Image (cartoon, rainbow, N blue to C red; front, side):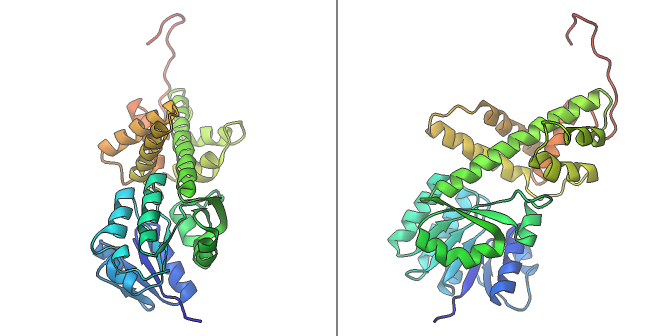
Length: 317
């Protein structure tokens, strides 16, 4: 049996760790990224670098995509120097990017026209203390797969490098849909927690106390206890999952909801909230930085609260 050759396009914050794990599992990996510094960070035995997505596809049988947006996926797949310009018949593209269902369907159609198989598999995680970069590092994601069952079986050895659980949701587009819904809910949850922390700070309670209390109430959740709370306590807002990416997913959710005539007022507020963060130059920070944004808009510091006196009865303002 022919030994398969593996390649990966996109080695950013998550893709970097995907590449390390793929090299460890399969012994060799061909990579491409437009950022030379990212490529340099992976230099070493078992890693081969190519000059384009096209040359990578020509040299591999299985191509993993780890890209930040629908536009990036479309460019890497369909450009003159893209994957489909050189991918061999029956080769397999595994797209782990978080994109909209429409883009996934278009990429599947474009690949099928050239005899190339395309499987979407955006990744998410609900393991305590393991989300974003941490989940990429330890391979604890859940893979949300859309595509043919036969293609999934061929992709499974790769997906199990990233994910402890693989869920086949059905046709192309279904994986992307569920990933957007998951991030829509988590992004709104972060904002709700941010508002709660700001309100508590205005009453004199530091974030540490409020988080301890909330973990014993109906407000308890994975987003609160396992993701946000440890990072807020450590004052760590480094980019595990950036505000830019969270904004992108809320924006895509809004577009999808409009196309299906589903009202999502809370998602609309989330789009604007994360856009405010981006406008203030904080798009590269963790989306959890929203706790600081809401506090600052209120003139507060959640770690060093300044109690405020409520207005007299019957007065507002």
